[in-house]
Each structure stands twice: as C-alpha cells, then as structure tokens.
Image (cartoon, rainbow, N blue to C red):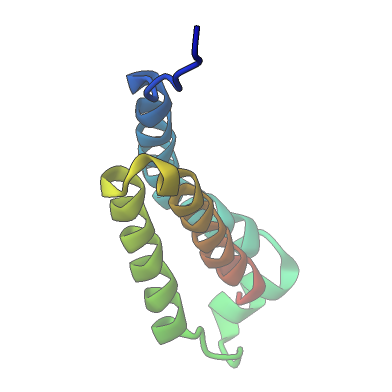
Length: 105
C-alpha cells in the first residue's frame, strides 16, 4: 500500500478568502476609528482647530491603500499556496495605513 497525498480541501482556500474579505471590510472602520482616536488627543484637537501641523503624507497613504487592495486581489485570486502570504501582506499594509493615520494628527 502506497501513500498518496490528498488534494487540498476547498475549506483551506475559502478560509483565506473569508479572512481577506473580513480584513478589507474592517479597514475603513479602522481608519475612521483611528482618526477619531487621534482627534480626541490634545495635539489632534489643537491641529484641527488652529492648524500648523505637519502635513499628512497623502501620496504614501494612497500607495499603502493601493498595495493593500492589490494584496486583497492576490489573496482572492492567487494559487492556494500563495494565499496565506498575500493575506499576510494585506494585513500588514492595512496595519501600516492605520498606523500612519494614528501618527499624523
């Protein structure tokens, strides 16, 4: 009797799909919550009212969001062996974008 490897099940791929979609769905609410959190600080409210703060790096933020969107597409469309890496990249890029919002008031 010889051992033959079993093909991957459909649940492995669908888990990565579901997690990627959940992460993408929670990205905008996380950005909004981060901005609200920043505005509740003294420095954030001072910047909102009086101005004079460091400019927000909008281009870098848009690049991060675009890269996160590409990672989402890769997590949904990539071969099964690459989905986990694409999902990890998506989560890291989204985390960097939220962190950027937290750093700049």
